[in-house]
Length: 187
Image (tube, rainbow, N blue to C red; front, side, top):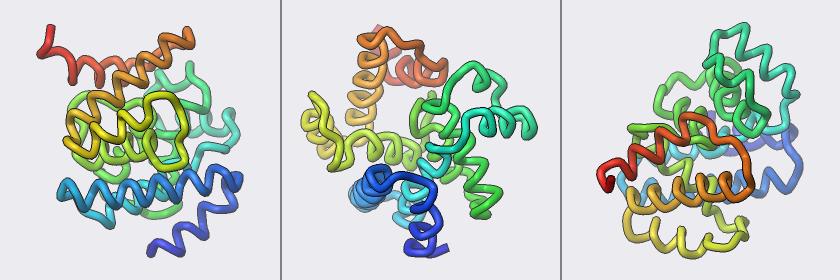
């Protein structure tokens, strides 16, 4: 599916503000893919579809997890975590995406994971630093990503974990494994 057709398909699934965010993620992902030698079309597709399940009914998403034997740990988490893996399922089953790297980029865009591919890193980072994001420290993250993708990813997962700890929220195991993957060599 081409860009405009994908955008047309996802727009009714989200509020205008989330659609604008999705455009920002797409533009950022394309820029990062060009800069760091990743497949631009794959980055564009993953970025457009990354939040396809963001506003899906939580009980429906849990049913998808059960019925299609997705990671059972997901059943203990809300839509903030569920929408990535269920979004990958939607991308594969409704949009007929077969590229496993694109599906994983969608699946892990909120949590990260150990041993991420370049495309997975690009989507994780683009989701965090797209131009519409306005939080303390976002400019610092953008500068790190501009200099080096892996150092940028390290800074982004550190920021994400620190934010969750500060908010006294639980941390999905994939995020901890992602963090450890980037920081283990420093121990």
